[in-house]
Length: 317
Image 1 (tube, helix red, strand yellow):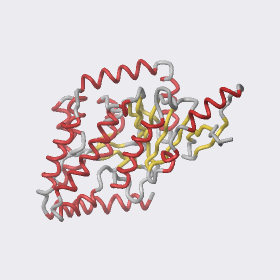
Image 2: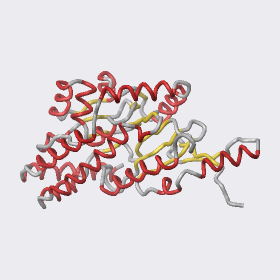
Image 3: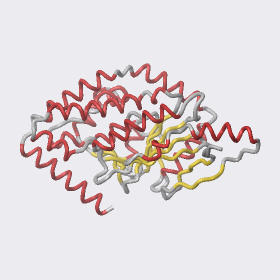
Image 4: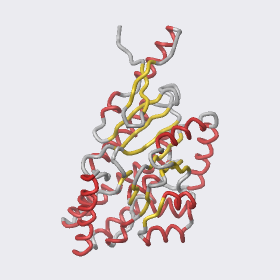
């Protein structure tokens, strides 16, 4: 007989997953449920920089970024995200494995994500390689746009923040339906410090969520904001005590199960109102690439210092 999977993974507080047998008594039901779970592509659980766990009881897919080196969106992680989105679309949905909630967090201690790969940007700028800068930006925009639209599935997406969310890390969070953040988490768009601007969604999403004037303030100030400040602005939806982000996200999911359909359709209506097309995002990222090629030696040195600081923080953690 062909072997089928009959277990469900549950995220533990320490990041490890334990497994419990699915509690089914009827043999026919067991085979049906096992076959459905076996339909999840194995490749989804073998991504290099994304740690994926499926909780069948709460129909939740938990994903944790597990970057190699600095916690930034390096090209390899972006490839993993493309595969992640494709495999979720293959394995989950109506008549396939049930999925109601999709959660993204990070395994990097004290950091959600520092954003774009600054070291890569510097090298591409020095090489005058506009094509590669644009390709990187377009890939980010495509991932972001798919996430804004919930991968075309009837799911609620949740960003779980347990540390710093800066630059592209903050932009990525703006594409989620809900953000749960620990009080010690910080948010910011530092690109203006070295003569750039956030080019992968911040202008489009913040201006729609907060209005143009407030969006411009957040972008131009390059200030760092607390989770409570982001909550007061309506960007963060739920605050958790430090160390309690995972449990707070679980609690949000537990309380949201019965109203899942309402949440999904409410978010769909909101996205109709947002009216954000991929072309808008890609045009802005092309402006970002052109701006990057105008950076001078002092700007690139500051970018280098930020890379070094990020590396030291990562090594210390």
